[in-house]
Length: 479
Image 1 (cartoon, rainbow, N blue to C red):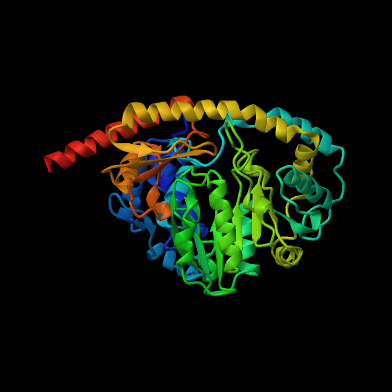
Image 2 (cartoon, rainbow, N blue to C red):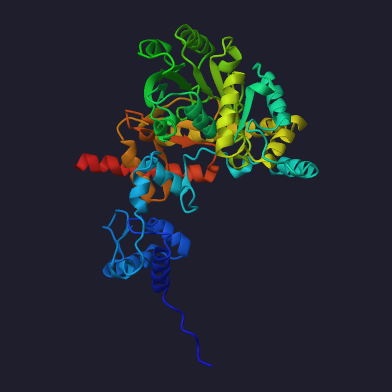
């Protein structure tokens, strides 16, 4: 019996790409994954991918220049098949806008293990409460039965548990004032659909994580940034803004702000609420980092100080337990909760019942509080480790504030454009979040995370960033 000849890898790759084109997964106009992503998917080096793509270009199957994305083109063998809908154009002109291209690039790269993630907004694996979750899953398993669809607001028992948890933080909210959502982002989406009108103005901190999302813009709303100082959003600047009743709202992330790490002072919180009450400006408080304090608890949430029902308060387990749990909540007036629950029923009939049972057990068993107590010391150590690395490497090139909690240190370089730094780091397999995606007009700032990367990853990544900065400085001097 003769030996079976194995096809060359670049031929296998070509055939696989053609198959995806023929079966409609990558129709004409589609962008192929990056060379790095293809190399990881096929477990080959990039030179093999380049060879395969070059041959496909010669065959007229794809097109693209060096350094740019590769697209599928309509060629002879495709035109013989039935006409394909112009999905590329359909998607391009859909109502919901795409993420910024740079944000898309970051989101994709974060899923690739070949990148060193210096900015990722999650807790690392060493913080994951595997034992506690295992214990909770065993207990919850005894309650598994027929759940049904629910009423859109969330299980009453979980809403009661969240109510008790919020009460321990000084926030008065009965179960009927709480809506369970699949993460804080869904809460924002529901608010954009059920509370705000098209052409509304959303005031927010500048910079802000919200700028990296199309959630309000997709509903026809405008974002208006308000500058921050060391005490948080500047209330006096907010007072100077023109707004219209029922057409404006304030979004704020006052505790361990993303990306700056700033925590709004108690005095500023009181002044902000006073201003919002005076001008009848409703408030969305994104409070998902509150429990991630390191040494001392932060000031009370805006919702805890709210006596007029002006604040819609958002919380989540995504940052403290596991984003895969997909459990968050929104607290507000009962009429607002009913309205958003009705919209929720039109979308997906509610959050996973299994996840809700898990979340309820975490809160009522004391395991959540125990988990937070256990991780704070380690999180503090990692923050201090990153601070030491920054001081050792960038004390002449940048400045930063020391966050009292959360995940991030926002580093402001004196003369290095963050987009250029991002591009150079990306080529070397290091992923950072430039301030430009948060609408930071200075464009010299970078968000670094001390929560997700290991200490070794932080050390290696900072060293690469340092080398890149030195190279950029030398090039500028020569030029």
